[in-house]
Image (tube, helix red, strand yellow):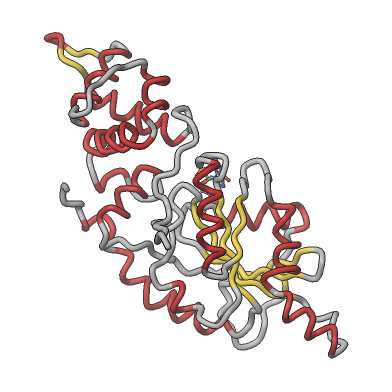
Length: 293
Ligand code: G4P
């Protein structure tokens, strides 16, 4: 596997300790954590320390951008998280699909115990507070804005806590804490970095676009051959490389340069763009590893 230029992402480590501190300092202010991930890469778009950082807090995983992900794969991910006792929910913050289930899921699953306890103690007026976390570009802001809609309003700063964070009040006595820190994915794993580069979550500069597109074409050949054939109308044999495929795409699209050569850079940009805009269909880049019993 090609080496990724780590220079591009070196600014992250500086933020890690700060974000870690922010999360642990604010965790006591909330009843649960909602972690927004990209449904196409539900593991790769998670912060590797999130489980440890939020130990003991009820959690819900928001599988956002489900409009771009493979529906069957999303179902598998929901079952997978559920096998660990974690509620997850597929949503599309672009259209708002799935968001109606968020508050009911919080109330009937994630925080049911707490709500029952409060009801017994006559504390039904106390708001339910959730911390919203997510690595950049998963759609955390879109999620909060969608839920809050035009009613988005800041709740006053609470004493003793950092000013930069924002409380967002929803109907139904729910308050969201929009954490300001930058969360990082598991960058040291190159497969993770590549998948995030496919989705556009990390800078395209970590790998040149041709290499990135060749890797994507090989992935598609192995996992979504139909999408590849339908979109580009190309035929290929089993052993063909990413470069072979890229050249076929370029040729089909008439992307030629002087001397009858194929403009693989243009072809690469096209493949990546068409993946990101779902023109290649709804594609999930990773599946849960399920141990056969
Ligand atoms: P962040 O706070 O986690 O960094 O993410 P943000 O909400 O800014 O969303 C990042 C990008 O993802 C935005 O696109 C946003 O529109 C898009 N997005 C968010 N949720 C969804 C979703 O459910 N489905 C799809 N298809 N896209 C989603 P952008 O290109 O940066 O901006 P724009 O297209 O909104 O102009």
